[in-house]
Image 1 (cartoon, rainbow, N blue to C red):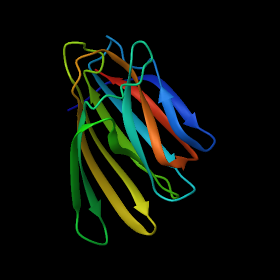
Image 2: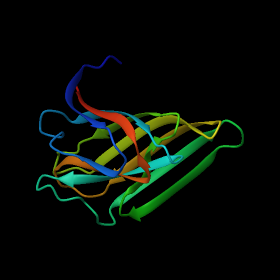
Image 3: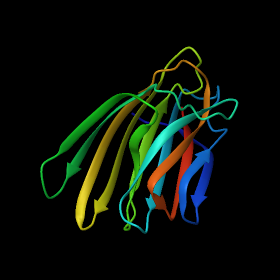
Length: 167
């Protein structure tokens, strides 16, 4: 399926940060968004958890997030985990000392009559071991969301996060 990506916003990580907010990226212009991120962390593997930001710039912190993830490990068996009724979508983004690649699709974030859904995939390294990640999630709240916040368990030290509208 061919898509037409429309650049919306990009934000660089240029110093060590525990969290980053990207606001004013979701609107009535699109129903589907693509977020592409390359994230490096100098202190080891970093997982970035996602929360959405509403149109009043409030971070949605209620227990309204459900998510599931599959970690495909190069040196051992795969690992799956999931959780419901959480205050964040845990480990949706990844960063490593060697760098990582993340692609996340967000569906209907600005539609106040629908839940917001997420699918994603990422690659990275844990030490010298290769990792692949597949994610799904939902914000079970029918409200308009205009942005998102990432919180890293190990500070991100460099990278870039870009948001595109999908036509």
